[in-house]
Amino acid sequence: MGAAVSDWRLAHAVAQTGQLGVVSGTGIDTVFARRLQDGDSCGAMRRAMARFPIPRASTQALHRFFRAGGRDPGSPYKLVSMYRQSMPAPRQELSMLAAFVEVSLAKEGHTRPIGINLLTKIQMSILPTLYGAMLAGVDYVLMGAGIPREVPGALAQMAEHREARLHFEIDGAIPGTDPHLSFDPSVHWDALPAPLRVPRFLPIVSSNSLATMLARKANGSIDGFIIEGATAGGHNAPPRGDAGLSRTGEPVYGARDEVDLARLKELGLPFWIAGGAGHPARLTAARAAGASGVQVGTLFAYCEESGLAPALKHSILDHARRGEVTVRTEPRVSPTGYPFKVATWPEDPSAGVNRTRVCDLGYLRTPYVTPDGQVGYRCSGEPEAEYVRKGGELSETIGRRCICNALLAAIGQPQTRADGSVEQPIVTSGDDLTRIAEFLGDRERYTAADVVDYLLGKVASPPRSAVAIG
Image (cartoon, rainbow, N blue to C red; front, side, top):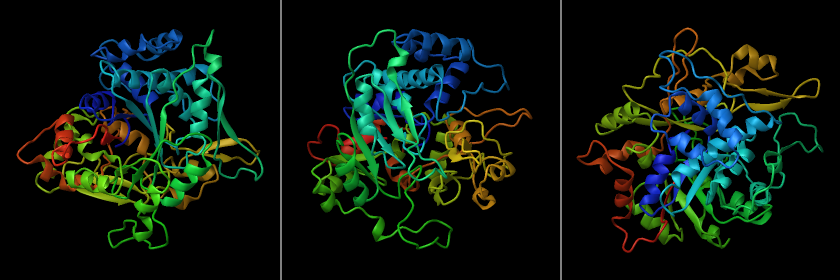
């Protein structure tokens, strides 16, 4: 869905229907800081901050970011510092606080489980973000866009408030070395609290081989899998093989990219089907194949409770009703190198905009070894000359866009630049968006409860937690 489209309001609404609501942890520290700068008009941020068990973090965040009444018109957002391999305690505490607030609000007023979704590719903020979510009692952790083999062990360590480590992927790292990311919860406490509950861990996979490897070689408990196909929104796994691009310039997926569900069942773990799953027939088929249910993104992304900016949401729905929306799998738009789904429609505000390149959020930066043996950071979406100066290939910058700034613009948090220009959004959606008119019928708007009713309407005696949002 992108950053904070699946926010606390949407996860809360889904949980209220008896299903699993999942908040997005992608860039949540920046999202949180910008909500405070926009004035927190409903008071939800400050209400949850008052519950955070490390009060100084809340005090510091309010002092640095909160603006009563919001920012002055045209003023830019104050930035949070970009993550590096090693970060000071106050910066870690901002990530902890942001994740705590998101999960705490999603869990407010009910006892249904809530999950958090993170991208393995965004390495440096994973541990403090997960720890903050655990302090709020998060029930599930979902992670894709990489191989999260060490995350189960890290969750168990952090539940005991002990130091956790993850291998740190660095371009050009010397073979035989073991670069790592570490996070020690104990440095944030004067006196350690009681142990936390370890959340259930569900990796998001797109192949039998990855599921098998994680089930056998992860350093802790795997509690099931999300099986995500190439029709899902956001980042997709690259296709296997060398089929090249289609006539329209999109990656070509084939039989090798399909998960053998019969083989997957042999692992003895529950699984949910994602990608093009937003239809009651897909839920029926998934359960017939042995799945516990489905994970649905696109239908929830356009409901009234989602974090997508209302003007964008309603514009896309209005055009989708007329068949005027397309979804492309763009092979080069994301600096990660993963294919990325992009929605376009006649009122797309980013169409034709020639953005001046700047990298000031840095979530998708790639760590690399500098000539003097230090760790540097580069992004193929940053200014071309800067990327090349850091040792990157000029060809890698072609077609890249700043996904970080664009996804924040899509939830109504666009940065204003010194020249007065405003960052434009990228809206990511699964292929189901092009068929959403079937679901809409005569409606122009709908709620999360409408989505759940639709998905379960043709299922006799639907099981609890058959549908997940992520």
